[in-house]
Image (cartoon, rainbow, N blue to C red; front, side, top):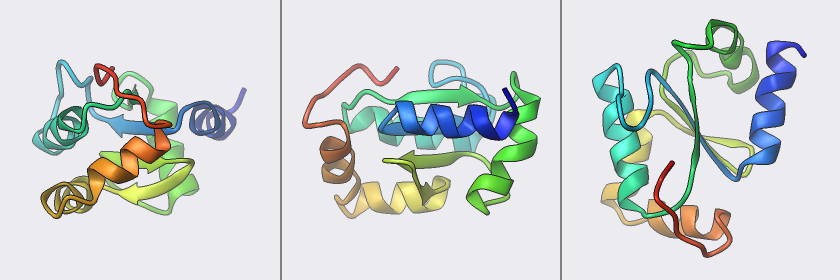
Length: 111
């Protein structure tokens, strides 16, 4: 499976996906850490992909998303944005309902 096919499969199989450096428990950059914290604070289950452990995904995701930096948050297969946009949505109260709707109204542990 190509990296692009793998990305598309991940997006199709998960309503909320965070492509980040590291993991939500052990982020490897401050932007990824803050983004994962915002998602966790919304108390919804989300999938994540560590782009440092998957260099083929790191190389090809910008071709799919047209977004050059990490982290990247996708909801229902659509790019929401990176750290700044996600944090702004969180601050304005828009992130929680967006994620709750995508997750089907269920909450989870954020992993």
